[in-house]
Image 1 (cartoon, rainbow, N blue to C red):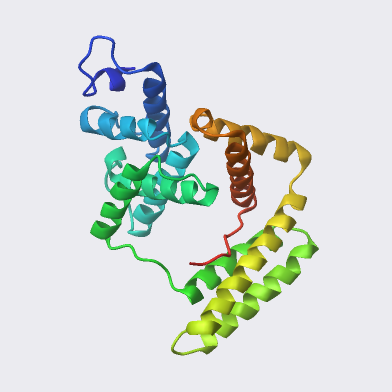
Image 2 (image 1 turned 90 degrees about the horizontal axis):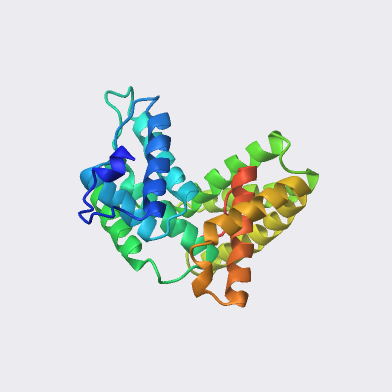
Length: 254
């Protein structure tokens, strides 16, 4: 791989094959996102992507981070030049951190957390409000229902989220204290109900495909995990993949 061999690795053996392949996949994906314009991952860019591989960022998680940067980039107006992978680093680490937290994977990539936090401080990205969280969740739920991705049993969840949104909007100063805590608890309960609906909405062939994807994403973490921990994290990974497949939000907040 031309891009890998041009990187900062100085030993004669070059990078490990896994890293080389990882960088090649990222480079290919970035090329597609740049409408076919090839931006080689070399030098400092190669070092960045190699760190992702060392942190065991799954490729699909990295791709979602790249997507997130491009979505924000497109919102700024017409593109003027192809995007370098360096610009996507904060988003990739953010998505990786979110993925790890969703799955309950702790501690072994704290450097990713620190880098993502530093980038968030630079870009000024802040946490959304509870009403905004509810509005986004309601939009995603409504779209999934309208597209036939969820059955009629999802209607009760939709109605409850809509009611919570109206309640949050009705308070001009925002929900506080016990009222806010009660809503957070209610959202966690609704999220569990939504997952039950989602699992029943996925066809068997899709479920098997998601299981394979979960195993692949967790393969690098598996050797350091007990069976009990692995099964717990795998179940969380399946839930996250199911949400992504159906376009569902996470209703829990805080």
